[in-house]
Every structure is written in C-alpha cells, then in structure tokens.
Length: 240
Image 1: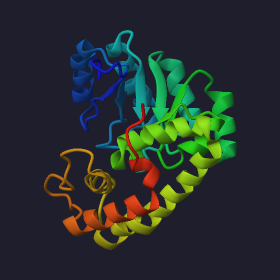
Image 2: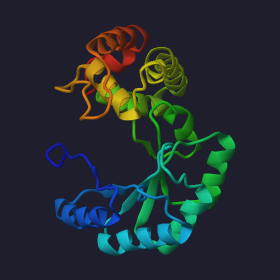
Image 3: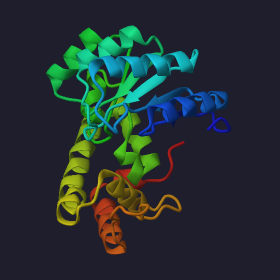
Image 4: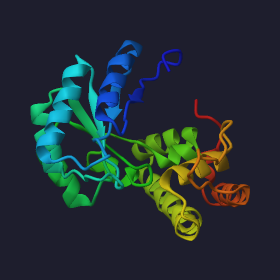
C-alpha cells in the first residue's frame, strides 16, 4: 500500500478481547491509517463492558485512529447514540463501519457525529455519500476492486449514473447472490469469496476454511456471467 501511496486499515478483531488488544499493539509499527476492530462476541458485552473494552483499545492505540466495525450480524448492534457515547469516552475512536440507513438515519448521524467517519456497504454508498457517508467497506470491491473505486468517483462526476449502477448492483445481488444464502446456507464470508472468485481479478477461490460451507464452481461461473452482463461498468479498463 505504501509503494502505491494508498492509505490502509488493518483489522485486529478476535473473539478473545485480550488477543485483539495484543494484535493492536503489534500492528502499530506497520503504520496503518487506522486500525479496525469489532466488539467482543463470545458473549454480548453490556454497555459498561463495551465502554471498558473500547477505552482499553483506545489506550493501547496511542495516537492511532480506531474504527469500530459493527456489521448486521454482530451480537450487539450499536445505535448512533451508543457510538457517540463510546466516542466521548475513547478519544482515538474516529469512525465506524455500519449498515447505514435511510435519509432520517443520515440526518441523525450528521447531527450526532460531526467529524466522525462513517463507512457503509458498497451497494448503498451512492445513496449514502451525498448524505454524509465517508466511504465504504465494500462488498462491490469483492467483485471488482477497480470497479468499486470507479463507482466511488462516479458519485462525484455523474451521480445519476452512479445511482443507476447502484440499483443494478442491488438487482444483481438480489437475483444471483443472496438467493444462494437462502438455498445453500452460505454465510456472508462465503458470498464475499464467491464475488471475489467471480470477479476474476486475482488468485481468489470460493473456498472457506473448515467447517464453513463454500460456493461451488458452478455458482462462481453463473455469478461471473451475470456480473459481466449486468454490471459492465465494473469491468472496464483500469482508470488512469
């Protein structure tokens, strides 16, 4: 990332919160732009326990920025008010990756968390960026890293086209990817690996580690055909 002048984050999450804090201390020497972490999830932490954990991570981070990753499948789903409370007691907490929301949600985010970075999914960022989303932890980047960057830039240069592409991305996901979760019990990581394999941008296959269920090569081929047909903008020549 440094070679190409790209800022980067490193994740240190672990089911054991003490291991997560140890990882944080180890990666400081690598000089990331920020470090991301999840709440402990072996047992859902209480409000007091969440504060204790985030304050402890903040103390270990020195002057490093921290990003809390709170996906929809987390055992504790944080509200914007709860995140604001954590930011008040943990000064290094600079951002969060969240599921996003509607216009009212973004209005509340702007009032409550000015100067705080909020990252949303790649399939909603064209809607969210004009309302205050600062970036995306992008499932679209699983399919095409270059295309995800192009889509981000398109939000500024051609917002109507960006919204149209986003609508087609959601139709693609709803028609070709999400049904596999229901039919075959594929997890979010399995779907991400499926998208990466279908995108064909690197040596990434669909297999997850034991004991998790993976997409098949037939799923990958079908998703690749659908993506190329329905989302050609994601697979154009590399941007300048």
